[in-house]
Length: 419
Image (tube, helix red, strand yellow):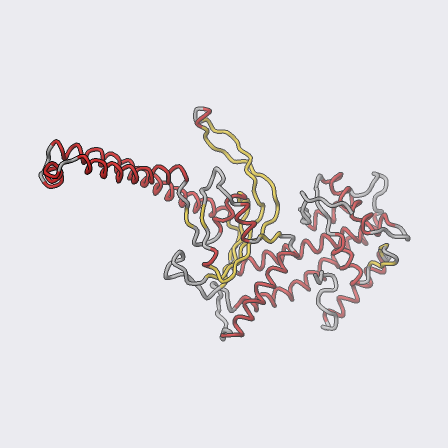
């Protein structure tokens, strides 16, 4: 199977659009399209797959909502009883583990603190470098998806401050989950009991660190050099001047009012300190300007918070599972024949057809898709080759699964990855 390190597993096609594509445009030749009867049968099959997965994810949504209720800062109504002590620690661990598993199913990539530090070294042209206090969190996880670039605009002094377009590397989606602990960076009123979920779009890669609370803007190296140089120069000049004055002249300069010696001593000091203050004040203005830009930017880039993130991400995971199941079954059913295909055959065919027909480059997660279909009984495996059961039999199998599910006798997740 082909490996594409620059591609992601996420398939950026809506399920409704994918079904339309499979019914009308997929395949190696224009004459090799579905008949009207087969198209109607496959659309019914696709609806059955969609409904089955939706029912399974609805059950998972209830479970995740229950796990998050005790830690949701926006819960309304609040749970009648919150876990305490060891029970609370266990519930917190389960919540984070469940969320991380969900993000993997929605094809997000988990970033470690070291990876975040590497990605965010420096700052983009639309941000400033920040220092994140990782010890201000009991637990924190960062997830991203969709590496790409967006077009933004800036004024360049080299071009007489004319506006120019710049390609900025971005993440299409960035999500964070964290629980805070008491820390001076967070202030005395920080909520250290609840767990916060945040989801953003089109975040410049170098500015991922700005999504976490407690960040502190770093003074640029040049400004620190200027400020440190001003202070060092002031101290050095004072010591030098004091060493050249006689005791009587020094006393007059320090306590004798406005004299020539006092002017010679204080005037340069005032100039140096004034330059240092100007450097410090410029940095404070830059911090305030950045804070305003950050607030304005995240206002439009924030997609959801807390409980809303759970709903959105479960919906994304459900859509992704549905896309994978439909693609794997359809290409095995239509093109693999009775002998079936190896996973590499199916993987390459699906990726090639999506790229050729839709211009979509993905690294299809073939093992996960095949495992779902084999568990559901609509794809068979023999000797490392996979074949789709006939469409009618597959439809009957899904109908039986649905009946068993409504009676509560089918294990949750027949079409959902266990990994």
